Amino acid sequence: MTSKVFVRFINEKQWVSLCSRYPHEEPVEVPEDIFVEWASAELDGRVSDSQIVPFGEFVDQLHNRWPHSYQYGITLMVSGANVFTAEVAIPSKQTRHIAQALPYMIEDQVAQDVSLFHLITGERNGDGELPVVGIPALLIESTRALFTEHDLPLDSILPDMLCLPLRENEWSLMFDGKHLLIKRSEMDGLAIEMDAAPVVLNSVMEHWQNKPQVLRVLFCLEHLNENLKNWIRTQISGQVADAEFDIEYDEANASDFQLLCDHVHSHFGAKKPKFDFLQGRFASSGRRKPSSFNWKPLAAMVALFVVSYTAFLHTQAWKMNQEAEALDRETKQLYKQLFPRDKRIVNVKRQMQQHIDDFQSGASGQSFLALLAQTGEQIYDTNRATNDAISPRRVSFDEGQGDLRMDLMVKDFSQLEAFKGKLQKAELGVETTSATQDKEGVKARLKIRSERS
View (cartoon, rainbow, N blue to C red):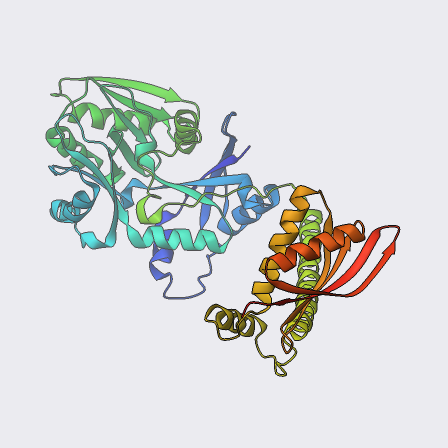
């Protein structure tokens, strides 16, 4: 199970200043006086009590507790003082058109060059307006780079005021020790410095539309004393005296950071909130747990198989080459027997074809193929009448004499004489050059030639 780590910078202005120098001064050393507050949680458990430590010690604690980055993920909460929210009316619903029009729609609402901001959008509200949340792109880039440099798996960057719990038809307000955080919808909120709280609250209550039924004020008792609580009550009551909604005060026996972490952990779990800045071009890449499967024996087997199969292929190729050479020698030997006058053999197939062509064109008269065809026809007729009466054993051709010489095996001498008679009737001259009888039958060698003029 993957653990979740929540963290925020205590002296965030110093952190932002550090990020503004990155990556112009490489490598950037994190000062020892930059502190963070962090807590952890399992996906099915509660958030632990937070602790405040220097950034370097925070890195060491995480590495000691989770040796591998896939074992946990980090959610960084940034102050709403570095973030702005807005709503714009863009008719197009195509993502590409929205991305092109968005900077022009909000440039009047941002004091700096809007191209320097990383913008994310949510779902359209009931009036068709598109909520927008922006943060300096350099802050995202530098934070990701520095976390990566320290091997810290950064999964999310969330504006703190949007991490407030929110009920339907309510606004939420909380004091975090430095700012008043206000959230009026999932993608809309504001962080107000305490010194400017009276003026800004008045403007907020006057100009923010879609007033809620309830303004819920969250008091985190860890940061508040009675005097500060009374001052906040006075400021809020004075600014919303004419508003048509109720004010309810809730007290939490925890720090503001603990309250935000508890809400994000219980409400979103492993899901990423829509107001997470790590999306679009800054989308975080997932981490996969290394497999516990021992792949080395399998790799060794695969390597052995590859080597063995390669050797087998080489052996087969060598054998096939040897067989091809042997077949080529036998072919040339047979060709020399058939055509002894051909002294130079270059291409057996081509030279054989030439002899066939010469025969078909009549250049050589009654040649080997003709005699062989006529003799074979008589052998076929004889064997059809009497099964296996004649068995040819060897055939050769004397091109100089024009004789077909054939070694035969017949049952007896009478069968041999009958076969010779058939050949003579087919206008073939036949002469017995040798004939002997043994247990298998009569072995005879005949000399056959054509008697056609």
